[in-house]
Amino acid sequence: MKARDLAAPYPTVRIDTPMVEAARLLAGQDLPGLIVVNRQGEPFTVLPGTQVLRMAIPRYCQEDPTLARVIDEAAADLFLRHLGDRTVVECLPERPKALPVVDPNATVLEIAAVMAATATPLVAVLDDRGGLIGAITLDALLDRMFAA
Amino acid sequence: MKARDLAAPYPTVRIDTPMVEAARLLAGQDLPGLIVVNRQGEPFTVLPGTQVLRMAIPRYCQEDPTLARVIDEAAADLFLRHLGDRTVVECLPERPKALPVVDPNATVLEIAAVMAATATPLVAVLDDRGGLIGAITLDALLDRMFAA
Image (cartoon, rainbow over all chains, first blue to last red; front, top):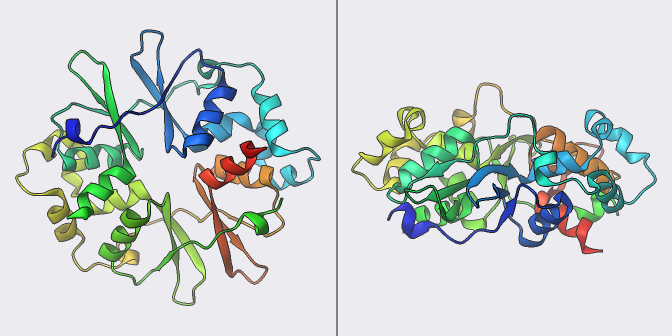
């Protein structure tokens, strides 16, 4: 069992995708994070779900979550207004997290080691030209490992 | 919409649960992480899924994932052997991550702020005596926020 057998199609967003659209994609598909690709379709970074929340919430709410309680506004409205018309690249942290990647021949153990070392429940499988073959989630990996 | 309305039953493991059993629970139910409770059933810490992998994989594999490729052993076998008969508490890091918690009156925005600030896609909802009412996952929160 190699990465090429485990890789499944995975939705991507482009660096110029509106962040609101990216957030809706994350919400609608119960994904552990979003794979961000550049304008050439090459994998660029990964956005964990909690990072998307971090972008959508004003900083003062994160510094003191109890402040959030007194805000008299529906959460979804506040999120959408705070994200405005910014694109994914405009919302990324200064040093985006490197997307964990493996090649098609990576073993289950190797994939698990990459997830563990990067603390990311999602790895991309790239072909030898750097194109995205698909992705493997932690859930899919564990299912495979403990299915036997 | 308050935390009490969003809280759903969530499986827990005890600090003296065998780690192998905890890993199987995580694998079988596609959970974003495990809530660990003490012997009195009080929430103690949260174990993100990637942290469970970290415990199950020998350190040399994490430091150099390509080493993992040359190991001639099925991943599941290596995991089970490496975990041995250790309990959850024996596998925890020296300073376990605090379990993000909210009270039953927390608003959606407050819950989101806690997840964003702690980078944890799971928060526990506690009653005023510290008992676990349930938990809210990032998926559940996003579904609720963008359902309207």
